[in-house]
Length: 305
Image (cartoon, rainbow, N blue to C red; front, side, top):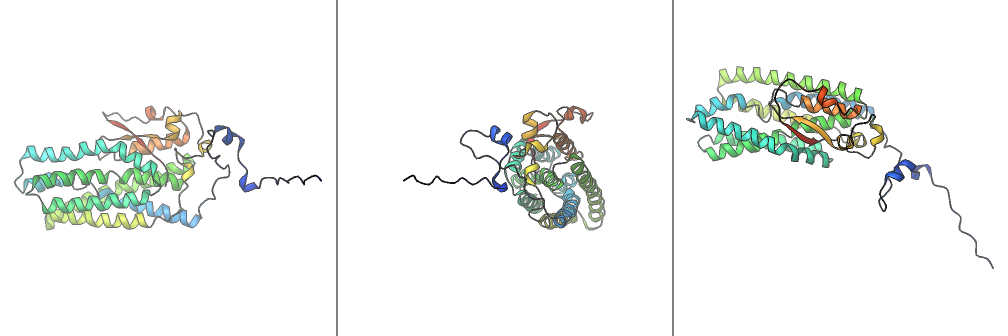
C-alpha cells in the first residue's frame, strides 16, 4: 500500500522573500524579508519631530557651552594663562580622538535616545566638578575631558534620530534636519545672550546654573521622543539598501558620514550635509559640501533612530 504523499502548502505572503535579497544573502545566513516594517503612526512622528526640535534648541548650551567663560572663571581662581589654555586644549583633543568610537557606538546601538540622555547627564556632572574644583587642576582637567567627550554624543545622536524619523527620502531628511539645525543655532544665540546677562548680574556661577537648566530641558525633550517613531531600515547601514537610490560607493551607503571637527561654531553642519548626500546616493557630495576652511575629518558611522 502506497504511503500518502505529503502536501506542500504555498508560502504565505508574510513569509515570501525577495529573490534579489536571497541572492545577496550569504550561505547559511537568514534571508531578510522583503516586506518593510509598517510605518510609525503619524501622531508619533509628529511628536518626535517637535521633541527633536526642542532637543536641538536646548542641547546648544550643553557640553562645551561653558567654554567661552571657562578661561575667565579659572583666571579668577588664580590659574595661569598657559594652564588655562592646556585644559581647554585637552578637552578638544579628547573630543577629536573619541569622535570615531562615538560614531561607531551610535551606529551599532538602537538606544540613541539613551545615549543622548546619558551624554547630557555626564556633561552636567562634569560641570559640577568644574565649578566645585577649580583649586584642583587634575579634577578640572578630568572634568573638561569627560564633559566635552560626553557632550559630543549629542549632535550625532540628534542627526541619527532625525534620519530615522524622517524616513528614507532625502527631501524629508533635509527639511527636518534644517529645522533642527536652525533651532540649534537659535539655542546657541539664546544661551550666549542669557549667559552674558546672568553672568553680569549674578556672577559666573549663574552660567553654570543656566547650562544645567538647558541640560534638564534637553533630557526632557529627548525622553519625549516616543519609541517606535523612527524606522531603522532606512539608515545607511540598514538592510533595506535598495531604498537608498543612486550609485554611491558601498562604504558610504552602508556606514560612513564625514564629520567636521573644526570647532563648535560649525557644530554638526557637515554631518548633516553628508547624511543628505548618503540618502541621495551622491559620492561627490563631500566635495560639493566642502567649506573654505581648514578642517580635520573623522570617519563617523551614522544610522537612524
